[in-house]
Length: 145
Image (cartoon, rainbow, N blue to C red; front, top):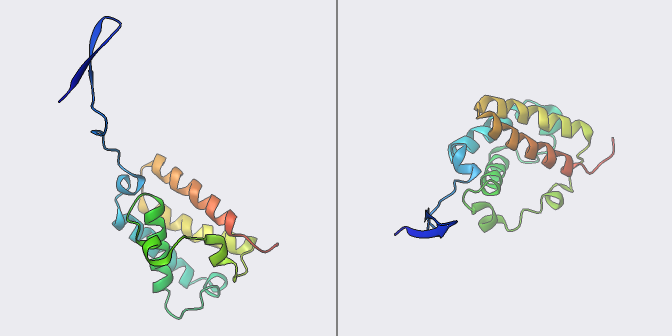
């Protein structure tokens, strides 16, 4: 039911509260498939990078890939699976055991840039995603140099 309101002696249609649905960034960029591709492409680069690969103690990068994918999906408005399975992200704490310096920061962003570029997102969405990734990478640095 659309209510009518009078505003400056004119009748205007009002949209009832709660009827507008906004899409999340997650939905706007293609949902799980987009984040699956992003993270998979990123980890393909990590697998070939000796400096970054050394930061992943697991033989198989699959579990790390899944954790990052679930985190990014949740962060951008997708399912809350990451928190349901792992609790609060606590990203700095989880990365504290690893030496994350400027070189690791730059390598991480280099591989992430290639992955983001491969997605061919709408330019505004690409910029929004990239701005976050740059911020996130900078916040993980825990070692000078």
